[in-house]
Image 1 (cartoon, one colour):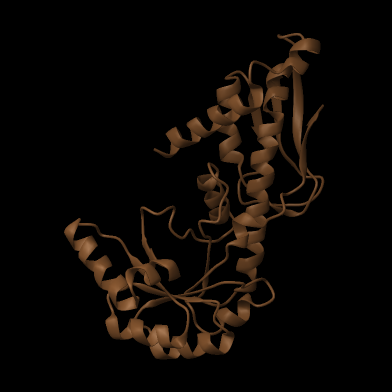
Image 2 (cartoon, rainbow, N blue to C red):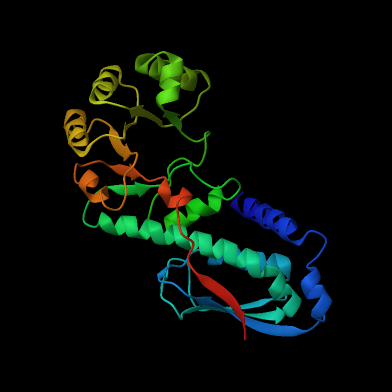
Length: 280
């Protein structure tokens, strides 16, 4: 399944970029001329996306040869060479932009995730991503989070129940949202975890009275309210903090004792890692 999705993504991305041909290369590069290139790292970070670009090269031209130097998850610094590439010059040029788009974005996400995980060193709290992703690129962005040391929240709307504020309001309240959800899961014979969002300490208390969930998420809670909520829950359910938490505040939230902290900025507000594919 994963290989099929990856292949479809690569083919779709190539079609978007190539159209009816790379006319620049076709115009000035003889078709059978061979060449070499290297992937040059220009910024400190965590490398991610190598697995993906190897599949990309095999699709573009099965005769392209890659000499891997660095693997996914490697800490890199300016001047490092991730790999050497050799083969038809037209094929190398055809792959250049897509290779960089994938590697730079995935490495940026992995780097950001790693920075967050380092702030939690020594604590039990784990970093989660969210669904705030680039359409069509989600599975790779979530892979980059894993490479950076984080964990994936749900992949989409299909693999977990997430009762957020709008669901609760539309359903008519916390008790109705939970009860309807349990009935739905039973009726459809689904075994999905149920997470519910709390917007206040009173919401937490209501959820505790109703029960029937696996995790309680504290939405935009203060550190003090988070600490109080953890005390009241007393280990009965998994807990998650979310909303406006950044590098400057994440450890303080984690020290409250939450199991997870979800950070949307990991995938929707990142800086790509600088690198280039240079002819040699």
